[in-house]
Image (cartoon, rainbow, N blue to C red):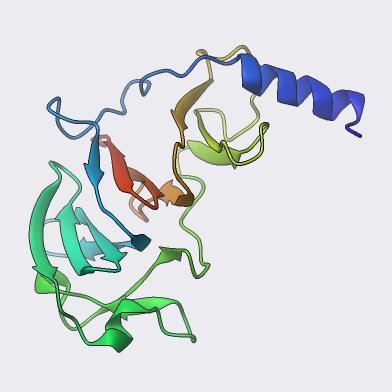
Amino acid sequence: MLSEYEQHLRDRVLAAPLSGPPSPWRHPTAAYRSLPVGGLLGVGFGNHSHDGRDLLVVVSHDGHGVIDTRDYAKLIRDRDPDASDLLPSDDDLSVPGLGLLAGTRVRIAGLFGGGLHSTTSDGWAIDVVAPEWLRHRVLLSSDGGRYEGPSGTDWWHIFQAHSELRAAGFSPSGRSLVIATSSDVTLLIRYLS
């Protein structure tokens, strides 16, 4: 049984329309909103130190790869990694980096646990809620996650999962946001001045 407060929150989330990302967030390309990735196990962010861009490591049953968050470009893919590289290490839930991230380990979040950043240093926050069980929704807020005003002012319902949600969160830089399900990856990006 939900308390009156919990019921009020549930009703607000259920009433919030699914919307596009608020400014300054946008999808990397207008061509498509998500990247299909069958059998996705987890995702994690690496940073290419030479130019500061966010790189997304995607681990699936079919291998793992690195995606440039700015445009969904697949930078490198290993379709036949050592089986031990597909599963995150038990110590820190990390996998070996590839390509520009070679020689590093990248922490991932997904089927085996872990987590991504849920806030940015300038007050953006992301929350995953399930007011109707197994229909996860992702909420993005510009007020640190208070969700006080009406939907579309300081918070937005930006994603509704139609397959199993694996992970959602920000890159350490706060410039990229990923939502990963068992079947696809959705990115939002912004430019910081």
